[in-house]
Length: 114
Length: 114
Image (cartoon, rainbow over all chains, first blue to last red; front, side, top):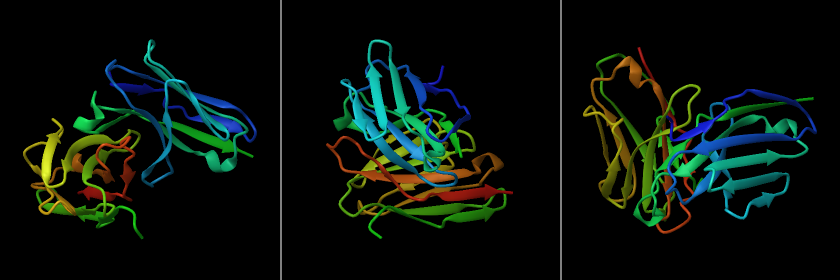
């Protein structure tokens, strides 16, 4: 079983749609969670951190369910520029002061069409 | 540009040759990470340094791979006797220790082994 699992997609949605990505992780001791965005042939860039209370940044909402070991990302009113691969990421060290290797999911490809 | 830089951006080599990649992290960052990404997959952790000390190595890092960070600034990743399976994007990231481990990625070095 992979440590972080995502539906690889692709998700093809029209502009303005709401789209949700889901992710599960296997290590219950994980402490830090993130969504990264990766454009084609570019490096990953941090989209947002994910907190237990849930957090929102504009059109993006991230949620964490520790009991189910489940992370989600919701994108509202999707734009053409949202087209990218979204990577679910978990910090691979129980104590981030001891090290910070990131464990990435496979990534979910999103394509927003006009 | 004050971000993470990597050199070269592309490398084509023949099977059996040695290659070396360089990463220059963000100047005040004391943690430096190497990841490898193949097509359709998320990045996979290879190794990381805190200052000049190599603190963790993945099982993915065979004996043919070696990484150094001699003065705690830039790092090199060398692959000896390259194999076709080494073809991938090699990503470097840096972060501050004792932070939320926001890792900033460089543009990557794309390796093709013929």
